[in-house]
Length: 158
Image (cartoon, helix red, strand yellow):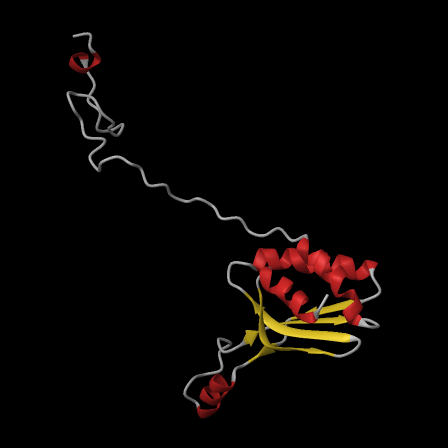
């Protein structure tokens, strides 16, 4: 399996590369971010990769380096904005290491394939009924419990 195929598998679970991957004979280094809404999927992927790394001859280093982007650094230095912690960002750094790491890309991709992809959830279904579908007709129809009139005339016994 190629480096590009492994990166494609990472992209499918929500990892976005922030800079090009660097590869040596014994190491693959990736820096990126997680797509919003895919954090739970990412946690499962990390867990599976950590488990797989303990069973294989390669190792895994996952970390979150923090940084301040250059334009924000200039704003803080110039005094235009105070240093209040809102300028701090982080990325994810993944380092796969091992003797001839490219030979292990297949086992890494197999672990990533076990990650359940998020399913879409149906939130709303349009009804094929007119807007006045609950209007009272001849004393019948849907009304709220506090709007319903009760008494002998309405119960049918009067």
